[in-house]
Picture 1 (cartoon, rainbow over the protein chains, first blue to last red):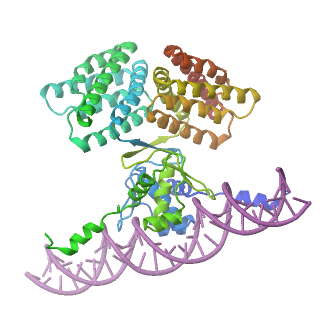
Picture 2: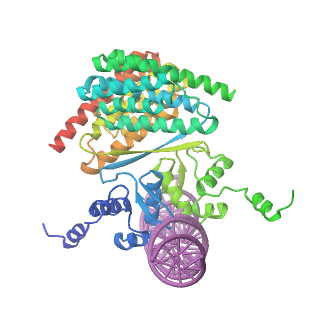
Picture 3: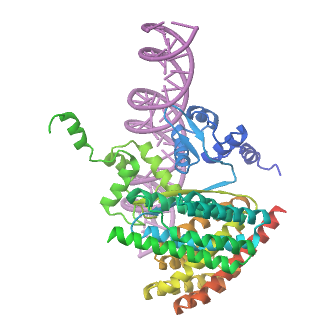
Length: 239
Length: 239
DNA sequence: GCAAATTCTTTGTCTGACATTGTTAAATTT
DNA sequence: AAATTTAACAATGTCAGACAAAGAATTTGC
């Protein structure tokens, strides 16, 4: 077994990760750094991790663009989202043209419907109560005529929670975030989808009753209405 | 009007974007670079854009992590996804635990099914031909016993193209990328989903025939088989 | 004409220097 | 003594140069 001492030694020597991201994650975990904490300065990272500064900077800059850390000249680098060796970072690029608002809803549609189906099947009684409460809150705010969008987010969020799969929440939230980024910038915020709100009460009821098909149908209807509104809006603003 | 010559001059001087991403996007647009084309080498970018090499590299590395470009030592940097000044970049973080492989397939499922439905409705004759050809290629490679995964990617890619919505391709590809990142690292690559390949021929036929429901059913079957295999795999490797 | 070896090109990494800006501590003033 | 201003410090941002490593292209040999 010990026929090749050099190689054996090389393998044993391999206790440290060979690339910067791994080494950084390891340092963060070993140090027990939490969200909000500051990372060591770059020059200390150079010393402790054994990589060149530019190499380390490339990783930190990438993490910054992914929202893992925030970096400020003079201040330092802070952790702003959880990261561990089990965290995988994925980036999407969305082209924002006339049709992209519609395209986003087209992708959101199946995700939202599937999320509702799964939630209807799997939600615990506690989760169903929360969904119902959020729906009540949404309707109340809507009827008073206040800004219902935060309540709408909370309602859908409750559904996504109930799926037991955090990816649904993440994907849909990112789509919505991109949607609003595009939407608000060019021409103000006209409260798109207002007319879908009254449908949210029966949707909540269907979920609570465990009527998967009805819940899915209502969700489809809601998103289709948003699509129609989006389309009208796009046409009105682009030709 | 010419009360402040210095400032006027400064403003006129402002013909070039101040940060690297803008400058790069501008160059790509001006040059008319398409997906698949090669970017100029780093040193030429240094010369033409007027930034230091490390600064440019930080942007290119970030773009690589976002799937905008692919970079290879010796080769060069290629554009692998559309980018323009209207492109929005969004990042996801996926926590990879025992269940995350399954969770990813759970999210992929509705996306893939919807993509197939839309493709079946909207594909042009030319696109249907391509899908058919890819299916034939996939079956041929599969029967010979070679690595069918690249062909499988090309087949699904052809479907995503036919939706006319690039977001489907991006989302699903990123999920797959994350899946393989997790999958290959810990325990080698056991060709998951092998038994689904024979179903791809009838799937292609259904798409070409315009039978939306059948195509959707077959897709669901395929992904459910992958889910089952994933589950078995997870259990075998985690207890 | 083809295969192998060589050269060239391009990205990857490291080092060192300086600029810019936020932070902190000292000095000055009130 | 307290508050404000100022100066020193620390951290990231940028640039330049050198070499390593690996893919691509060319040349050489047969």
